[in-house]
Image (cartoon, rainbow, N blue to C red; front, side, top):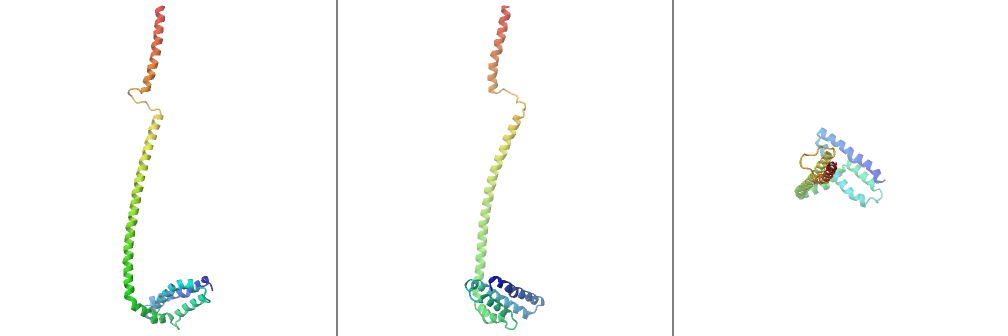
Length: 199
């Protein structure tokens, strides 16, 4: 049997069937059934944890997956009461003797995880704030450049539309053109005056 073929029986008999009867025990408020299925779930959690490692090192063993299914059936059977037997003989005495140490480790882990969460949360907020400030400064610079380009385009468009020239002194170039034009007019006037004089 392969791992894929073993998954369906383990899911049905190891998880769904006990889950349904756990629901019935909670619904009926039967303390005896409730304790029975709680013991099963504790043993099944330990079995699932151990299974993660045994699947790596013992999967080559003949009938390995068949033995796992048989073990789960032994845990569930009301005749063998495997989960109750393992819990009362091994798990409960071990947890009772190590309970204080386990609780201390859990409290320390909880405190460290809280401190780490606060630390990384502060760092995340600082990074986000720095990124927001940089984005805002870059956006402000780009916005001002954009507005400046728009204003220059508007002025160019207004000048190109043939708007009347502003009143005031003419530009420097127009003054030079006037100087060149004025001698020509005075020269023609003088020639006409000379011709009239000779006549």
